[in-house]
Image (cartoon, rainbow, N blue to C red):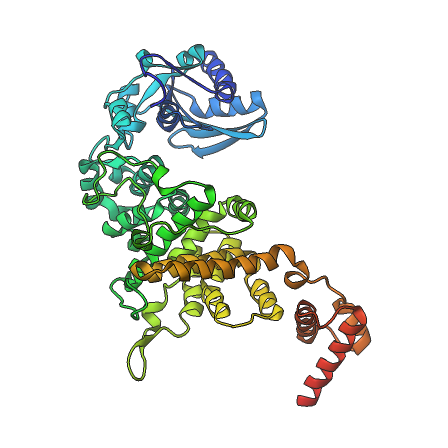
Length: 532
C-alpha cells in the first residue's frame, strides 16, 4: 500500500477539487457522508482514481443534482428507488464521477458489510478526508479487516451471499483479481464455484463492461482460464463450449478451446512487449502457486516461450502500433480489449466445420466465414456497438489471409491492396492476430527461425502500409459521376465494380492518370457487355 495507513495518504488535487464542493453541500444538507469503496481502496494502493463513491445518510439524489448545478457538471439518475445518482465533472482534461448513494443498514459499518469484497469495505468520513487532504489511518472505518486483505494482496468476500445479492460480482471479483494482481482466497473461490453461474442473469451491458476491463489487463488469459474452470466463460459465451476437447491436426498442440485461450495469452504477451513491459517485471505474488485451483496472480507465459524463452515481439513502427492499439474504437472501448475478444473467438466455428479428409486428417473448411457470423452474434448479444461487431467479424473472417499471403513467393501490390481494403481499420489487428495464432498453434514446436521469418514478413506489410500510401490508399482518379457521363451508364452496381477495379489497377501501378482510368473502365465495361 502507499505509505503507512496510520499516517495520512494524500488525495490528488483533482480529487480534492471534486470532493471539496461535495463536502460543503453535505454540510449544508446536514447529512452524514463517507467516502467508501473502490476509491478508498485505490488511494490506499497508490492507484490513480477518477471515480468516487460517497454514501450519505439522506437525500443522495438531491445532493448529486446540487453538485452538478454548482460545478457545471452533469447529473445522471442511476436508481431512483434506491436513491443512487451520479455527478459527472470535467476538471481540466479529466472526467471525474462522484456516485452518491444512501446509507444501507442504518450505520456505515452495516453498509460496508453489505459490500462485495473486504478490500472495498473500507470508508472514511468525507469531511475528514477533505480537511486532511487525504486518508488518515486512524479515521478509517474497517469492520471486515479490508486493510489486512490489502496488505496481503488477497480478495476475501464480505459475506457468503455476495453473488446472490448481485450476480455481476462474479465477473467483478475475477476482474479485480486480474487488475490488482491479487490472489483469490479459498473462501472466495468456494463461493465462485457455488454461485458463479448466477452471472448469466446479469444485464448484457454490465457483463460487457466487466469483460472489457478484464481483457484490458496484461494477463487476462490466466483469468479467462479460471472463468472457464468455473464454467462461467462458456455460460456467458455458450458458442465456445462445443470447442472443448475438439482435437486438431498435428500442427496444433492443443484442442480448439485451449488453443483459443492460448492465443489470448500470446496476445497478452505481444501487447506487453509493445508496451515495453517484460514478463519478469509484471507483478508476481510471493505466495502464487501454479498448482492452486484458483487463478494464479502472475503472468502466464505462452507455452512456446517455455521452450524458446528469448523470443521477442519486435516490429518496426512500434510507436504507430502503440498509438493504434491504445486508441479507442468508435464506441469508446479500447481497441486492445476488443482485439483480444476477437482473438478468443477466431476459431469458434471449428467444431461445426470439422470434416474428415480423404486419406486421413481433418479439415475445417469455411470456419473463418461461419466463425465471423457466430462471433458477430456473440458481440451483438453482449451489446457491443455496430462498429465493434463489424470489427470483430472482420478479424475472425480474415484471420487466415496473412498466412495465405505469406505463402505466396512474391506478393503483388494488388494482393496487398486487396488485403488492406478488405480488412479496413482492422488490417493491423489481423496481421498481429496471425502472430498470436502462430505461436498458439506451434507451442513447444515453435522455432526461432519461423518466428523471425513471420516478423520479417509482417514488417514488410507494415512498411507498405505506412510508407507506400499509393498502394494501400490510392488517390481516386475518377469518380462515379464522371464514369456515368463518359460511358453513358445509369447509377448501379456496375459503377462500384468499375471503381474498385480502377483502384486495384492504381495500386498495382497499372493506371496513373484519369485518362488511363477512364480507358480501363471503358475496356472493362465493354468486356462485361460482350460476355453478357
